[in-house]
Structure formats: structure tokens, C-alpha cells
Image (cartoon, rainbow, N blue to C red; front, side, top):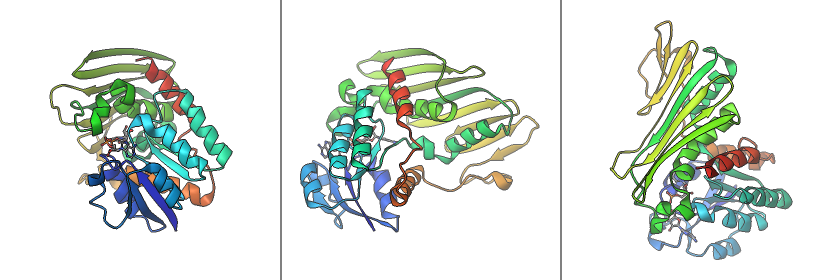
Length: 314
Ligand SMILES: NC(=O)c1ccc[n+]([C@@H]2O[C@H](COP(=O)([O-])OP(=O)(O)OC[C@H]3O[C@@H](n4cnc5c(N)ncnc54)[C@H](O)[C@@H]3O)[C@@H](O)[C@H]2O)c1
């Protein structure tokens, strides 16, 4: 049984903790957060407000980092120096040099390290990658990806609204779509970027060009309280793939429509997507890598470098 600790019991830990709890071959034994009230809902775990103390007292196999972005690499390096495998929330860092620092520590200490870029484990996005690679619907012609919502006023100490700590919309939100683009299609050959920003809102639009297609993207923290939504539309020669409001649809040029949604009632035939939670998928994948002793290479450092370099241009 692998022993797991988690640090940063804020918003996203609400997706990680249930995923760990559902696993049969790991045990989430310890939680750490500087706000004691965040630990109260988990009476069955050992609680820490000091990360160093958790590292000293616990014999952890895996650390899950759900801290604010600017703390990711320092905390990851400290844990890896103690021989602990680390899975860490996105983004790795706002600074390119941190990527080398984290990976070289992992290799020197012979531990596993992975940034949890969740779209790489999201069935609807995996489906797009598969359709692109197999050319099931012919060549890709264009794509459109969006992540829109209001300003994130809820974060601890307002860290998300502080550019130095979060990197704002490019690093916090748009990174999901750009990371998927680099993962699925490779490095774009050209980019055009636009940004509309005031102290109270941040909107970006970017078009990533490849030799045969382009992907238009947008991401926002509007001052208006727009409910969050993520969506995509991919135009292939023979079909349009669409994901919107949790529904994934394939509109074939021949008139057939397939609903791939997990709760889809349509005539889905054999192309129904697996019912799965992408956060649980990434945690399962990382744990399998630890157990098998193979480095988690689904998220490659050179891809993270490309993404951070491109985000730096905003
Ligand atoms: N993959 C996704 O879909 C997704 C979604 C949201 C956030 N995230 C990422 O997850 C990370 C955390 O975001 P969040 O929304 O949960 O933030 P949050 O502000 O809700 O939570 C951060 C937590 O860290 C705690 N903390 C701060 N400093 C600490 C320290 N030194 N020691 C221990 N605890 C400390 C805070 O008290 C807080 O509870 C960010 O990097 C963000 O980009 C990913």
C-alpha cells in the first residue's frame, strides 16, 4: 500500500482527495494546509499546518501538490530530495528554468515526477487526439477551444489575481488548451495573440498555426460574473467534433450525429466514451508508473518548456 500525503487543501484538492480515496492500492494518510479549517472535513487523516513537519514525521511514498502555482517547484524539490515521488498541479511554474530544476532533481533522486495536465487524461480531449492521429474523419482543418469565466475572487490570499504568483489567465486557464495543443499536434509554427486587460479583468485570444490547420483559442476572467465554461469545436474533412456544456457530439458530413457524452442518450453505437473522471485518471496513471517503476512520460518536460515559453510571450 503506497502512502500518500497532499499539501494545499484548497479548491482543486476537492477533485484530488476523492480520487485518492477511491483507490484500493494507495492510502491518503496526511494532509497539510496553513488554514486549519481546511483540514476539519477530513478527521480520518493526520493533519499538518507545516509542510516540513509533515515531511519529517510521515513516511510518504507519494506527495500530491495542490498549492498555489508559485510554490509548486520549491515544494516538489523539497519532497523529491527526501526520495518522495511527486504529482503536482499545473502549471509547473511561470519560469522556464524551474522545469529543468524539477526534472533534474527527479532524475538525480530516482523518483517519479509529473505535472497533472488534466486534459491529457480527459476522455473527450483524448478522443480528438485519436481522431487526429487515425484520420478517422480525414484531415484536421481547424479548431476552436475556449475557457471562459469570471474573475476568480475565491483563491486563498487572492493569489490567483496576483500576476507574480499566478501568471493570470495565460498560466492559470489558457495553459490547459495550449498544453493540449502541444501534446496532440506538436509545436505550432506561428502564433497571433491579443489581450484585453484591466486591473479587474483579463481576456486573451490566440491563434496557433500549423502547416495544414490552425486552432483559435480564447480564455477569460471577465469582471462580469460569467459562469465558467470550457468547450471545443474541431473541423475535420468529414466531420465536426464538438464539446459544449458537458456534451460531446460528432456531426458527420453524411448527416449522422453521434452523442459521445457520458450520459448521452443518442445512437452512440460503439464509440461511446468511457465514463471516467480525468482527475482520477491522472492520479491512477501516476500511481501505476510508480508501481511499475517507469517514469511518467505522458507529460514530457520538453512539452512543458514549449508551453511555458509560449505563455511567456503574452
Ligand atoms: N487542473 C485543474 O483543473 C485546476 C483547477 C483549479 C486549480 N488548479 C491549480 O491548482 C493549484 C491550486 O489552486 P486552487 O484553486 O486549489 O487554489 P486555492 O487558493 O483554493 O488553494 C490553495 C491552498 O493552499 C494553501 N496553502 C497556501 N500556502 C501554503 C503553504 N505554504 N503550506 C500549506 N498550504 C498552503 C491555502 O491555504 C489553500 O487552501 C494552482 O496551481 C492552480 O493552477 C488546477
